[in-house]
Image (cartoon, rainbow, N blue to C red):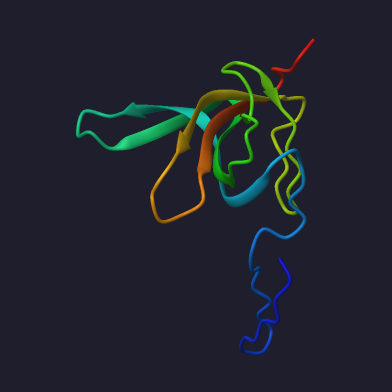
Amino acid sequence: MSATTHAVADLTPNFGLDGASGSVILTSFESTISNQIAEALDEDGDVVAIAIYGGERAAISGEFLWEGAAIGALGSALTLTITGFTPPAGSSIFVTENGIKYTNTAFATGSFKAIAISGIAVA
């Protein structure tokens, strides 16, 4: 998306889905990177230790302009390139949910949810 942005000195905010590419026109995108965490509590219920395990995972979701082709079958690998987004190392992005929305007053849109887990990739 081409836009001219203005901000206070030393601030360069991102605007729009810059650098998005693929087989659909993305209208929104969200990703959260996380790890599995276990906590050890003392007798007062205070956290005294944590363990981070299981490798990084990314929960990914987005919406796109529906043009008659689905984002992919559930469980299929999704190719997604977005400036500033890097999936966990050695992972493929797998579709876990998809849908289509039709209304009387707007273009049809599609949505998807996907997951990428470090080290889990298409063979």
